[in-house]
Length: 362
Ligand SMILES: Cc1ncc(COP(=O)(O)O)c(C=O)c1O
Image (cartoon, rainbow, N blue to C red; front, side, top):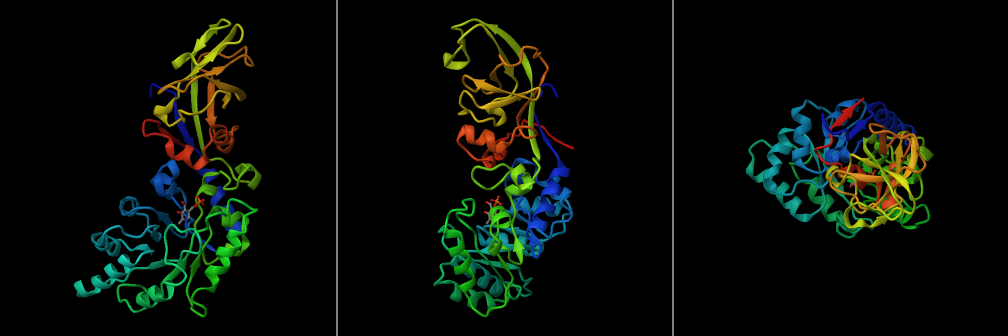
């Protein structure tokens, strides 16, 4: 490995965070959300590490097939169901659960029964739109969808019911409680397993704990709540994006640093160059002042982020040397802190780490 940029993935921390979900929501089964390459942490290593999980949730058939081909046996839920009816053969063969959120999916399941002599029933999670207005049947349409699923031989009976929370990251929003109440008002008297909670629901909204939870970001050690870090919730960071100093430059007052010469040295000083850039997924729009840890000491990024490098102000670290350890986020520098400086969320930082950055599993 020639460049030092790497994402160190702490699988113990990952397991700790899953156990924390079980502790916070003790009655529920947990289906870790490992879509988008497990939020950039590596789909397969993450699934293989989480042997205690009751199931997994992913976004596509392709992701699910990677898991099945590697021998993962737990239930796997496709969070958007199928996009084309021709995916149903694989879904049946590989025992995948599907979200059904749209009438076209009901049509496809019904026509499957007409096409197949022997139908292998599929486990369906009927998605109810309780206020997010993204995916799901409206409160008015859900009874009809339920009746069609109950009558369909391609569906394991009874189907499950699920919804997704739009504002659970904000304790002050009244919409989460409204969504939970709406969800429990649909299909009164119907016996079905239910699923509501994402990470924010698990950690912050007791009423959202149902039969099955769907934790995502908390597994990776970041808090889903605004203005918090995972440590505030006793979560441990899983990904530490690390690199090294590859140059230290003695600059004079007035020297301009990086593309566009956007940052001007205010005095004679040392500027360090770190081997990380937007080609690795470090955000190009990170402004001057974004915190970076060099040898465990926080220093500010200066000037523009390049494809392979960033510059840092080393005035606070007179002894810094080429080869010194740098943390971009993770151990000692919460991803949430960096995300706030950059104007994004930890989810996006994790998912953006590019394929050229090796993942080192410890
Ligand atoms: C339907 C659904 N459930 C659960 C999750 C997990 O959310 P979080 O990462 O906030 O826990 C997601 C993530 O996008 C989702 O789309």
